[in-house]
Image (cartoon, rainbow, N blue to C red; front, side, top):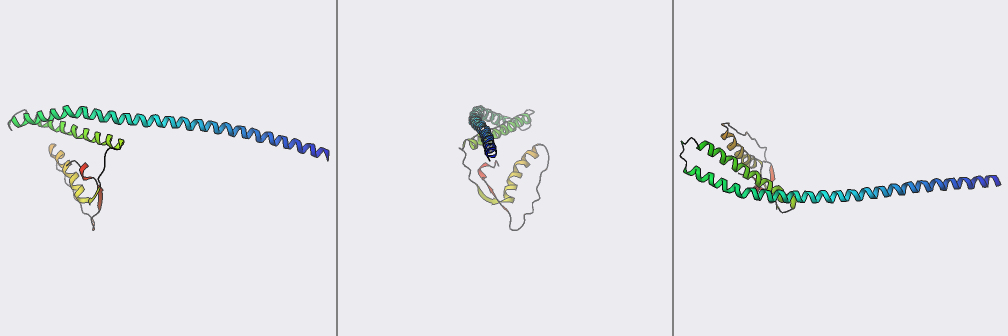
Length: 174
């Protein structure tokens, strides 16, 4: 009976030592996880700050480029008004005006993205017919196609009732 009691005490001590080692390992794992979470939190804050700064930079850059670009577009329009239709330079001037206008639109989109990311762009979605939205977008691309002597058309057969889409019409460049 004494031997089994001593053996039982040994088993209890070994069990307690094993539990202690496991507890210490778990504590170390928890500390490592806490350190990882803290590091990830810091990294997330840095990434969010960098993203905000990027948005601000793009916004400022867009405004800085758009101002002289608008002056350039205005001068091109003025020169085009004074240039005769048959002039050899008219096509080049129209091409330059088209490219500058496209760049201004791209800058506008860039500024919209910057405003969306900063929470400053307020969307005003409204329900509209899918065919009307498709025709509006088609109109933009038809103008581009005509510049390249291409014909662009759309055959659209909407089911009945015609599908409605949620669109912010002020953001569609027509």
